[in-house]
Image (cartoon, rainbow, N blue to C red; front, top):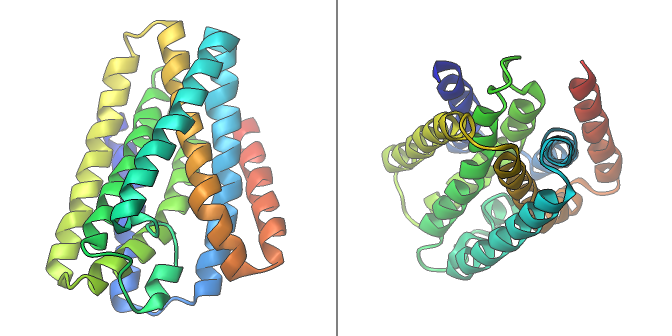
Length: 246
């Protein structure tokens, strides 16, 4: 349990790091785009190699299909609802440079969206410890990389909504706490779950991650990074394969 909490905190801390960078430094949008592109590739690999492959192997194809489809659908519905309130840009640097908030209360909608992203990711980090072979390094790295641009752009949105530095930091400390607890909950709950249930939950998280990457990270990565985006994303996927084999 202690390791699950620790690694959940490590992955969640990337949002806090991104927030600090946004508060005190000016990060070029192109660099953010490259980070997103690499994170996109790593996350796709993590979802495929760590979540879907294990789900199909441990629980069978049926729960994997059901869980993956449900995860993608649920994320899409909640993402649509949050986006209508101004949270569409939580992983996008465009909001940071637009000079205006997408909607009144957009900062809090972005915060809600960040929590939506963090919970299934952190649950699977905790669950990866159950086998007794240590945490999934691939999952931790993938989530950490994707959370940095999220912290950057989300903080920009909160600043545009008039939030002060102390309140912004308090919100992201809240995300860090939620990520930590969700990782611990993933370890505790999945430790007693059947193979079928584990497959459902892991594939559910995989579906949510792929939907998130496709709707928010991929478009912005190309918009800011240009033609290099495809190559960098491919290298991210290759990196996830290497990590999975080590």
